[in-house]
Image (cartoon, each protein chain N blue to C red):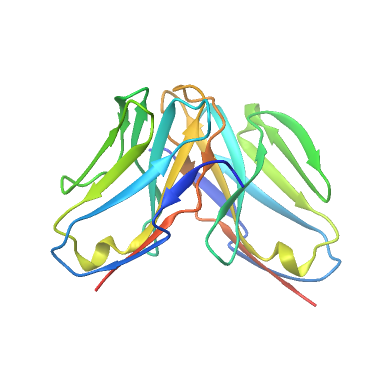
Length: 114
Length: 109
């Protein structure tokens, strides 16, 4: 158990809908990263927050947005869902915001868009 | 661009055999991690190893940053070692982990 929690574990929804994925980092960690794992693209970085502020952005679609709240939990919002958004979404946390910190991953949320 | 290449892509072993997985990367490394993704999809941290050598039970890893590669050794493999092994690095000025495509390992009884 990494100490990072993600909810829900599974999510099944329809095209065009909007969903919210939630992540709670390990106790004491200030930074949260979101990654997407799909069959065709592999594991890709989406976005990073550090202590409530956006720190780095990766291949995140405009239909997706995220935020980190004062209690340091983070939410990833996916809207106007398409079939291709079906994937495993991971959250990771680190104690600092820099590139050399070890990242600890949550169990993931498996999203299926029908 | 940033490249992380893992080899071999697939590996089938009999229980008890040893194996070496390789990760090559294209730039100076700030962070290098090895993960095991189990059949349920969970990413398990194996090693945080931007340089040097570490051992944990039957697993060990070595990173030679100056030559831009890392090796993961699995000894006396067990069926529970099956899954996909990922190498991931943060390179240059980047913050995020860049993942290789993984090595898919199947250990048969």
